[in-house]
Length: 265
Image (cartoon, rainbow, N blue to C red):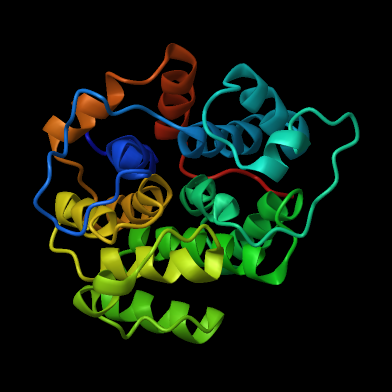
């Protein structure tokens, strides 16, 4: 299969990190393509945002529809309530659920202002805290910059100055004392660093999972950035992940592959 299947990088991170979310590992030496790997809420919500954007559907209705279709995917407590509300309201969250679902914004929009604006819209229906919005914007902008061929140095500097993230730490400094953290401010910078320190797509995923944190979500973020930058996912990984997806999820991925931008007017 064509490994450059836009957004499969994010989904690959989710699937490959799924078995380490509650069984953390502090090493890059682990089984990557394990038989127990599965997609989680990170994949479902990533697909939901893409579906909303490509088909002109309301964010709230689309996220609720996909979440109700996959009710056991692992949603957080507040979001799990939001899914079933008749008149759902944002709940001032700064959790990383906004950032992990944002990669399609970086694939579908072609300039910085449009990406930042749409990323905020995709977040504020649930994660309307400034840190929740910052996280989603940083990831979406990183994907856009990777697509456009920006260097890692350029990406690092842009995300540091634009969002106030400290991306100077090395993974070897972070890893020993890092713990499970689902906040944007406590997980997004680390996921970005995992990408920045990588040598290729697989190395990026291994970096992210080896932090021993929120493995599926952080690897989802790292995978989104890595795919956009390296413009390649090894066929073995792509085929393994794709085989674990359902037909409706595959259909959205295929639709996205055919699209490069959308009219946001």
